[in-house]
Image (cartoon, rainbow, N blue to C red):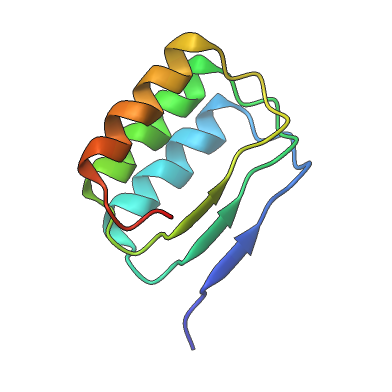
Length: 88
């Protein structure tokens, strides 16, 4: 059995947790949906996710609403999306 969807909404994942999750995404191409809403994710944390998205080819849905992502974080995600074509 493989994990296809992971909902971690409201889990208050700290920067280190996001970094660890991002590292796992580098090697995991079976996860299709990742929900990280309401976690207080900031610009620093989201850059880890952006780096993982550059190489991840399994994730098609990433939910990040209600976090603390500013212009820098949005720019890093935007750059990753120019490379990653699997996210919808």
